[in-house]
Length: 283
Ligand code: COA
Image 1 (cartoon, protein in one colour):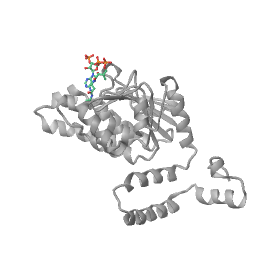
Image 2: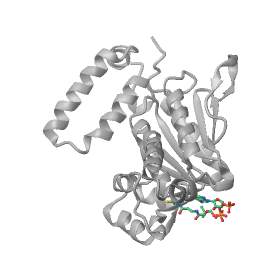
Image 3: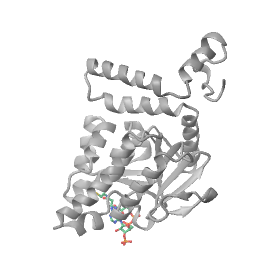
Image 4: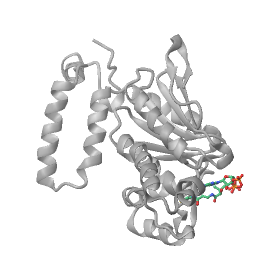
């Protein structure tokens, strides 16, 4: 951990770097010499970073990316796999830490999250990619579900991530062949929201983060959690559950955006959602 503005500690500093910029926390996986392969030390540090940023007011939006020419080359094949062969308890401990940040925490994270895929994205990297709410890739990025080449299956919830992000045929094709695909192809399959030339990637991501910063944080969080949990429910259960979430939002939304936005539209005629964003700081 290093010291930042006003002597407030900045989490990370070793295998993960954090930089704050006007409410955006740029979180960078930082083992470029190993293509940001996620080793146990990085997973431990990422867990601490996401824990710290979740309730840090310098972070309105978390952006996850990688140093150098990689997003992440998956789990570390040496430290996570080979060096735990014959030590199931050690492996189980490492796996628990990895799972904790890669999807358990990120999936329902209090802050909106964007994966910025700047380069290589393999295997285990699909789990945090999917757990992030939104994703933007460089056209030039290369994705691969390479597990088949290592004699393993895409575990660590990679298969679940693929089933969430891809259609049936595409997911099975890449799981079974280990072929790679580009950022542009990832966009065409819906794996990411957008792909842009690498030179524009950071600016596009910043613009998206700023758009999210304009929304009410409480309603944004409730909306994404509602969506992420709804697909395992039938229509009746979903309707009841959404009723509960809506009620929870009405009591928990300290900003009162609903009433103020309705007044601005219906009475004051100041705001039309089709023509712009409601200024949540307005009276
Ligand atoms: N685990 C452990 N080490 C890894 C790694 C991984 N997943 N991915 C890359 N590295 C290491 C390499 O062993 C190499 O280490 P070294 O310098 O000590 O020899 C270093 O990172 C650079 O890798 P290299 O292959 O030389 O880089 P490259 O730019 O030519 O190729 C990749 C980049 C990502 C295409 C290639 O490294 C690769 O295929 N990695 C494996 C990806 C994978 O299958 N991940 C899924 C794991 S389930």
